[in-house]
Length: 137
Image (cartoon, rainbow, N blue to C red):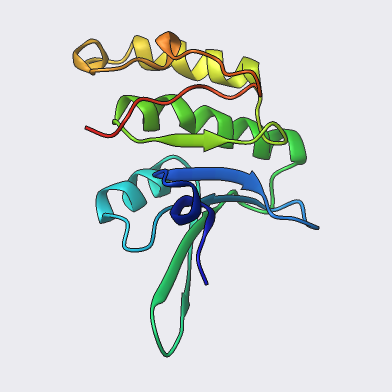
């Protein structure tokens, strides 16, 4: 049982789980705690499934939110993840351009943000509507 981050070679894959309205944020198997904690702090809820083999970990946007709020939370996390140096992909079904711009602008005004190697506002928007992502440092 793999996940999208493992399959795509990214640090975070944000998408809507098929046949549901659940917004997932998948991280690679054995993702560092630092990344998992960052997703926790950005409002995602950590989920785990313990099996006889590995323990699977993923994040979801809280179910109590409306569809628009789910998109907003997920998209607003992208600039912070990018500035932290993570490779992120977010699907069109979740993407909210206004939320991205607001989050990027807010991040730019935070103390210490100027020292970050990449800012979300300098990321190029790819043809499918999600930001291009810098390679992990």
